[in-house]
Image (tube, rainbow, N blue to C red; front, side, top):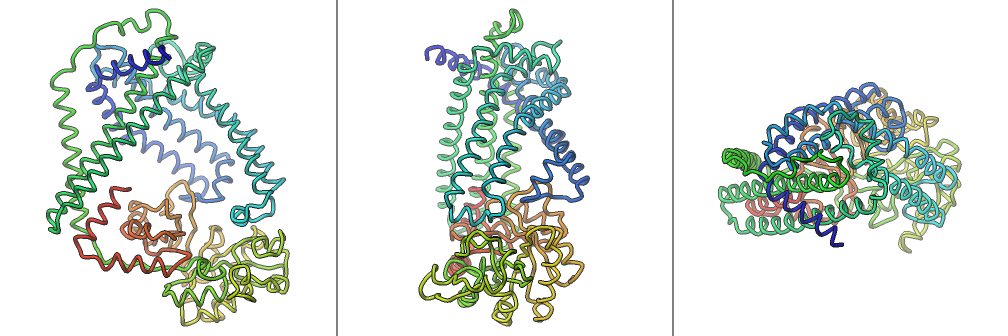
Length: 605
């Protein structure tokens, strides 16, 4: 313990002596990342996605993409550049911290000369972690195949039968084992970056091997030091930013009702927050580099860090002015950006509400009873799920098996319409709904016509019935004369493209829970995006392409304000009455309180 305290003391002292120079160096690397390395990563990903054939890959397609040759190439290419970005800054910082005579610009130039070697180092390490992951991924896949194959994942998560817990425990144990092995590999190779930095004749492969040899017998100590750094860094960041955010929100609350004063106060608060977050990021990077340098000093060859014994010199006075000037410019830019953003605000946004699964909070989901309640709750739309039965009937049902509706684990596609409609889905929800049955699409269209619009989700069971489901659904909409009052959505991008060909007047939307690439470039009319993924930047990008963003599943009223301010077009919720009440309360606010509320949302993001 005394050894650890001494080491942390050395780290703190070195950071204190060289912080101004390290701060300038860290800002320089951030500028390099924005100007060169981040665009390079984006270009690699864009190229690989273009070979895949789309601008974005989402949800279940992610697995198919990453196991394909082009997906593996994307993972290796982008991952290597991102790791090299981190390594580049760490290399410059440890060089600066080790030599008290070195100017930050000299450290910057010398480290950028290592870029190609650091990219190779990142590529080698990433390939190692991916290769190590393969048997564990195969193990998780085997667990899925043995225990969950053919079962609806949504139903498993909600019902949590014993087979769910067994599978989750096995998959969790496999993942935990991989993480422990990956952590051991990380600690064994922790010295590779400083070896490349200080031992100039060493190749990336030799640096990795040398790090493994030097780390023998030191893994516990290395892990303890890094864990102490991570804990201290996390606590400092959370506490300081938390206190600052609290103080800034109090400042905004006292801004008064004057719009001009509110704009000034808001801009100042945002500028302070931006600068503080940037300084804390710099502090974390500098302290990590000092921690790594301290660990390396204990395994470095003699004379490698001879300059480390020199007393650090004071940074040039011009350096402090330059760094201060950079911070002042950034602060001014933040104030101007905030003011322009506030000045151009439109406080009367249009926002529609969709009853998820026709409104699952007040009635059995995807039933005519739920639809009637959604109409009474003044929902603008009802979202429903359509599937094919064994006898090719179109039923309104979310899960791909009958487990949650009392029909056992049999897939929907293997049950007939008569068998499915024999199930009472109302009584489990409440006695008032006793006898409620799973409806067909035609029954649902008849109940909705002239009363509410429908967002119909296509849920194919696989490629075998995807085209038939799409064609049959559109035929039903056309036959009921409901095309003008409906839209289609799906996680099957191919089904949406087929729907465009069959009925060009029918808007189509892609459902996004996770994705890579730019989903704003997909050929759709709207995107149904998981609420936690929605940002103002995403909405702005999609709006340029005339694509609306719908957020799901929004059941907490506290989420309405931030999503409204992000510019979403539609909120998809199980409880439209509750969300409608929150929306109307927000719209009833005066301009100044509404402006302050919007600023709160900006700060929270």
